[in-house]
Image (tube, rainbow, N blue to C red; front, side):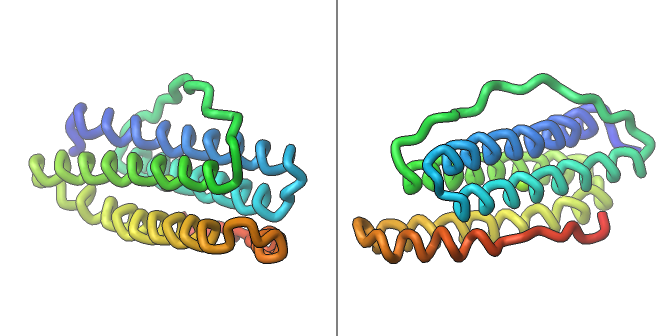
Length: 168
Ligand code: MG
């Protein structure tokens, strides 16, 4: 039986994953506005992944007999000075997500809620991937600096990114 505080913390995380989708769609819109369709696609796909993360928690709470509730959302940042700045913002956002997942994991461990500890392992691994991906893109963007050929090659590369949701 999930206690009320852990249930609320999981429900908050579900809402934060949806907020992450919102943050990434705002970055996608910024990229579209700059005619960087590949980078825009990258963030649209990222937003789909975030919605998938939210739905994983949705299903988990339902499976544990708990009622999910939706919260309102803050307006995300819609303006950026550069693509690099947008990726840096995304990286900081993912570090915040990691902090929240660790906190959730601590709560589950304090309650000795083994099913939830197990459930959160997937998210812990996912955060390692997310942080590593953003860190490496930021490094690339810094390295290519003012080389516009390399920059547009990256844009073309990210036009190919896609997301096929695995089973929840
Ligand atoms: Mg996520």
